[in-house]
Image (cartoon, rainbow, N blue to C red; front, top):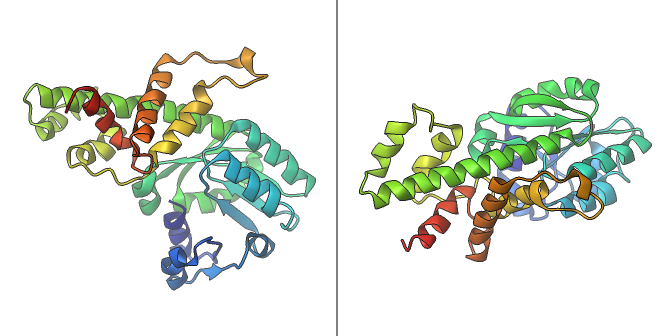
Length: 280
């Protein structure tokens, strides 16, 4: 997704410097005019706005707190598009301010197609004036909604994945039931998509499930991570626990994908877990 987002910024005429641990993966962006930095520190020193799209909160801590922040110039803005923890986003924001810089947590939803087409939903948390200043960049990537102060973008993404995870499970179970009942699965999707069962998840992933297209827009392991941030009880935060039985079940089903070795497939692959339960 990060590559597709960088490509859109290049196409819009912005000067883009990138860092890639594996430079061979940057070939397409370099052909579009991107500049390749030799290190994260060099990228930070060259940039006015730094975008990050990483895997896990531990990656964010290492890359942003330990590497980028010590190297950035005053007034630089860091935009973290990673789905990460709200508490970490608040910590990064405070650390950036100490460097006379700004940090915006801005996780996204929309998968690989949304990134390619500039139709990502962007959940922005942090200083509202900085978010407004960034809107021309966000508009290239999709639609940004300001959610509130630091960490609120991440909280919105967790709530988003709670909703998406349950929806993916629902579409999977509907398709499995339809097949067991002898229905044509394509006709089932076509029949219900215009009613209350229809959803963006069905539009994006229903046909992919039927065609066994489990290419990732977002890894299943990241769904487990994001749902875990919503349902897991953290030490010292016991008084703020939200009881979410549906999200907890969704996390277990996506964890089943990971246990089956399908952690790098897209979340729509959760249908394989439902099928296994039913002996299919």
